[in-house]
Image 1 (cartoon, helix red, strand yellow):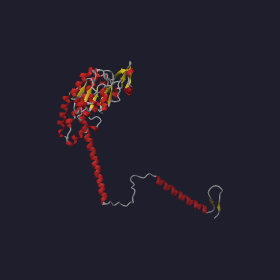
Image 2 (spheres, one colour):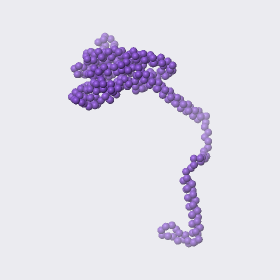
Image 3 (cartoon, rainbow, N blue to C red):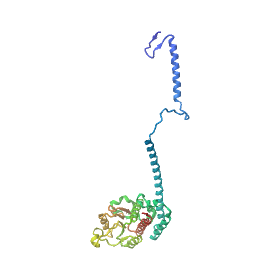
Image 4 (cartoon, rainbow, N blue to C red):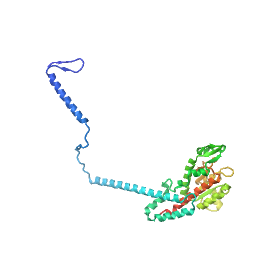
Length: 338
């Protein structure tokens, strides 16, 4: 057999052996093409793959461990279902009181609503009633967000501020703009901050805290005192004595309990200076809620509410809202089960 080598390309064979080799190569190529075609075809879903793995033998300890896992999963599912049921029950109870106590409602109406609700809940399990005694888990447990709308704030002229030259630098974030030389408050921000203040007030009343209404404007004295009387709380609408908070033991000749919350219907006195109660409450670590006008400083107020503090309609709306929030908090007390 003779071979001839080419300078470029594969080796070429001469003679009779060349034909036999070519036939063998063609057969091999055909078999390769068939194998590649079969491997590229998608497998039918009915075809089952045979597994040659040997079965795993589990010990008794492993079987017990798996059973414990299944029981724990079942317990978790049941706990989640019970929690969702309890949450629905709590929200329904809160909605009931928001419907019975409105802005124009009296204290007697809210108390009657609480007694009616207790009668209706007599058939419910005690375990579900005990969960109602933890309102801090909910953002609006007492339903204070339904006590007012932004239109109510607008109708009470809460968006009116003082003139442009009297703006306090700390009140700039709450100003929407100015019109005809007077500042205008952003009622969206006012509504959010008022809802937080009302929610905090309801929680203080729910816990049995003492709430003090404070105002030094002679025009609003009767309005403030009547609101505090209807809510069953206290009011100080006269000239402030700086010894009331800071030196109460010597003034009253005994141990006194300071209020748990101070609601300032105006943070300024008639001389347009900061009210003394603001500093005294901050010294004694008493939380405060204050109506802050455009010429006031909100830094020492725990829950500032930007808005008009001069017009009688605005002050009347503030008093009604805080009165209803206090009554909502107190109306939840008879529903507790200890």
